Amino acid sequence: MKKIFVAIMALMLFTTTSFAQTAQTTKAKTEHVKKDGTPDKRFKENKTAPETKHLKKDGTADKRFKENKTTKSAPAVKKAA
Image (cartoon, rainbow, N blue to C red; front, top):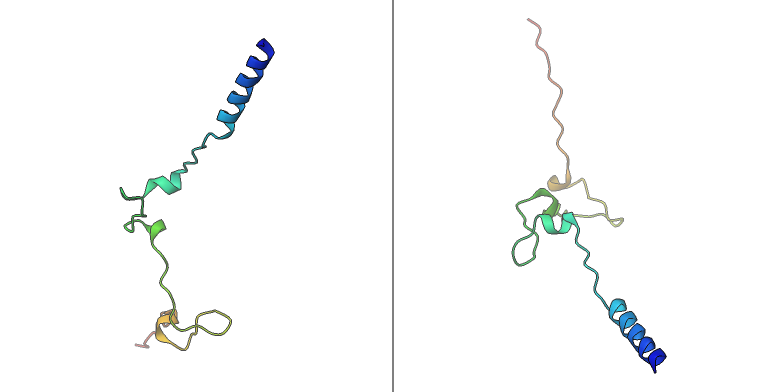
């Protein structure tokens, strides 16, 4: 009788520990969120990059359009005095 009781208790202990939920909290996920759990857009890591409207077939940005071009400053021209 004692062996059966010990076996049942061991089985109960094993089942309660195997169904326990593990808490996985990371600093990056909980650092900049609002009360409802959505990411706070005031912080840089939560903002999304601007989407390009015009893409080529391979998925890269089409540089023929203004919003996809990168701006370069022109070299300064020195005047002779």
